Length: 390
Image (cartoon, rainbow, N blue to C red; front, side, top):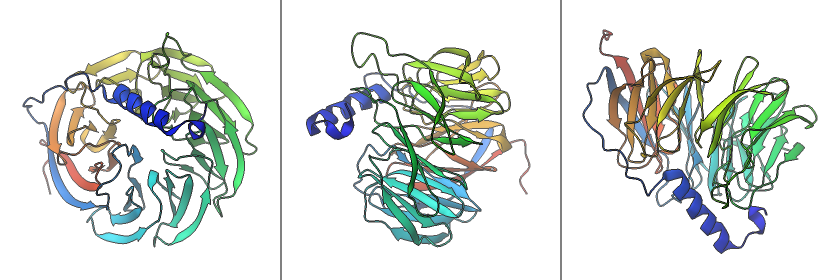
């Protein structure tokens, strides 16, 4: 049964159940304790996008960076571009739609989707609208952009390919949507001639970018359990690709490595996450649904370390800060946490205010950019204490 055919009371009920499943609100968040910081974290600038009184379940409006600028959008329709180094606003525009999925940037344009089923393309240098199109369902994740096509997921289980020039539909693929699913969708990934995406039925599908034909599909975790809640196996995370290997993780499912040419599963083990994976050299990092952070060997899936000090704090996906040999995550209280990549030890902590951060931090060099659920953007500079500042 698709979202579009459900009564409004059922949609509200499913959203509440999914939110409880994701946030683990019945579990007490770990209390933060003092740490011996090994990293210096300095706020460089802050800004905001108008998002006052926005809908609290704004899961998809993250930041995007390109060519020295960061792009942000608010649920009420505002889209803004800032200079990364200074925080100076380059342009600001307003779209008359409830924005819910973005931002994505590439090929000179910024893309943002809406909860009423529209996709908007703006000029990256000016914010001027290029085009807009209506798609079949709500957009909760950023699009993927290449010169050949735009790949977009909608909540009705469809993967759309759109023409970058004007947004007309090139092809569409669809997977069945379970009666109950988490509120969220995976961001597609374009890898060469393939478009890869996870779906709510626990499958990863590889689609030929030229004609939309399915090259392979792989079930990461089949639904199991007696109740619909127990049978949730959504893949709401963007797959990651390294060479000929594909990595993915599902809710109440598994983290796995697949072959990009066939979808064959090379290794997998139990895991539960609705946040994106991060790849770094030979290591995979993920935030679990319970708020633990894990580091796994990419070739074998062997666990390298696990950090439990931030359990049940509604963590974002981790991002790698290579300049400081660190990972960064943010939590439901607006705290930004830094961990040593090699050991998982907590290395620093700062605050972005008391508002939840739902989308992953964005890293540019030694700069970390964070946006909270009320549209406040903070830019931090991260340096090891052992590194002399110029």
